[in-house]
Image 1 (cartoon, one colour):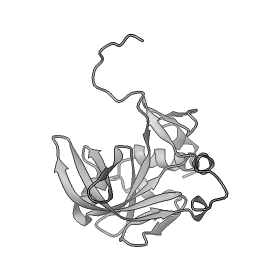
Image 2: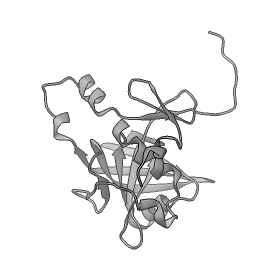
Image 3: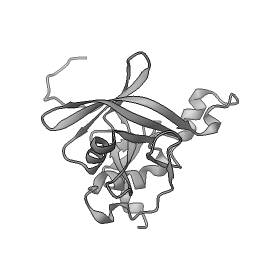
Length: 191
């Protein structure tokens, strides 16, 4: 296949979606949708992530140096899309129906319907021109107990939780099916 040069982009490179949970300065839970998330090694498994632009989530992480990263599933997509499209600085953002719990190890809000949740502590901030990279220690992983059973294969378990991916301004199912453009799934919410 012949190759062509294009402007820098990450189209056709799907990324998994996470809702980052933080508390604002008044102790109120806030969640934002992010996908610049991956793993690293520094004597143990860690997380590296990046947040671009000015975001309440980043303000909260700077202040407390902890946050949760809740894996987004197809079932969660309308809420996740809303939380990603509406600014955290808008007071009405968190006035939607969410099943919010608390981290087991860190003082972070979690979404109880997420099957995999990382409790993260930022070890290092790396400021960029219009974003910030964070290197994080995984302090705990909360996981649905059915993911630890041996009665299903890992492939079946992954298909069962149905994590959502994104690329090209669209959401995709675990199996690669189109789940709409950014901003569309939230229209299904009854706020």
